[in-house]
Length: 477
Image (cartoon, rainbow, N blue to C red; front, side):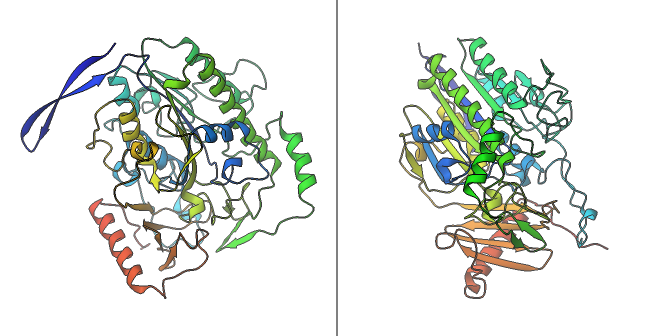
């Protein structure tokens, strides 16, 4: 049964009365948002991995739309998570580093003072959970939150249920119980964290109120450090590594760091397999409960795979350059899949660049709710892309990461417009310009050959930073 709700909209002092059709619970779109921590762009079979195995995620990809140029708003977790929750750029919500961030003095080459940002998502911000809850959605959160201390947890930001979401960014007790998680107690010794979060998510689906639509937000702790093997899969990947790799792969030098040059870590592969099994279980449950035809499934990662560190990280993001913490493509381009019944075409591929702020307005539109651009100020609905209409105009994307990071990244910022991308390295006082269409691996710096384009992008980035009142790093006294 449909009912009609009227919304009052004020534009330029004029009052407009508009009506929006509100559908019944069985007709309204449900949402399952799957966010994997530190998953690299090339870490899935459907995105090219030949060592890691993700058959269930690959099946999800085949049934929906694959996005090949999907971006996180930041190369580290908390800012991107805030951007998903609010539809607002990390600079706008003043969370530009992981919480609480690394002390700048830990960098042996420190030139800039610590840039101070918020250590929580302000309660004044409106989250997608709050927006949906106002529209009578049930809201369920499980897993990693990492957006502030108690008082700023998921249940304070619009979620009816919170299983496992607190202030820490990695499981303080590791992936096997006891986890030392203040909002998720283990049921048995040695219980695996991802399995438990999946069980809780499935339990919610089965026990939910069937007269209300829902948002299920499962935010995996995998594949964040500590890199601990998933015992059910580790032996398989050890054997596979022995069969595939006869010798070591030399690391790639990246300034003062090293990047892993090949996906060959069995422990990391087993952790990805745990996520894949979880996705398979959730999709099976949706089918059993006859929810497939009115549930949108979104799969995403919060930043690039951990590839570049003083010593090589656990994964490789090749052909993309570098990884988590860096503004090269390996640090900000993410594997993304959306399956929206009746909207996305099975096996479709979208090459249009998008960014994590876009989820908020997209979910609103798919839910049949009015857009709220005063909230999701930096996001655009992806529905035209999902249904194959394409995007009406070219967008410009900005990244602002003025912090020191344990990956050895030093303060900088970047801009992408069309195929062109400019990165500014404040520590060295240098810039790099790349044409991503011709050089997605960012190997050929075109600054000297294209001074006009370099200056144009530099000025646009500076103007954006000024308009957004971005906090710029200040030299040490």
